[in-house]
Amino acid sequence: MDLPLVATLADLVELVSVVPGLHLRFSAGPAADASGTSRDGESGLELPGLSANPLDAEAWWARPTEDWLARQIQQYAHLGRGDAFAWVLRGSIVGRGPDCEPLLLDVEPIARLSERVLDEAAELYRARFDAGALPGSADRRSA
View: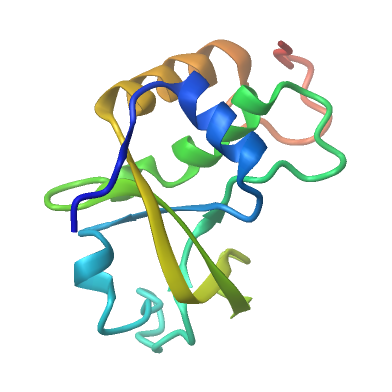
């Protein structure tokens, strides 16, 4: 399945602003995921849907949408190895995975993220976030 390509982080911001309920997934793609659901790596249990990361910012998020998206991308970017790539989807939330991530069924593939989006997200994340900082840390970065 050829998915439309989201070329830049700004393009992803635009997509999320006009299409609510989108999620991000790192995997071998929609065709590879069509026949099953996700599996919890630690327990080995099959999950009731595909694990994905929400792209809609939470109501409490007071920073720019691009910051939210960069953070969401970076949280699971390590999964984009080998044949895996980042793609955008929507579907019905049927539960939560072991990391509290939404689990989706009835998935509709929307787009694939370009390497440029991933690079821009990584750069923005490094510049604007204090990765791994605990609440109350003195060194907080802001937009």
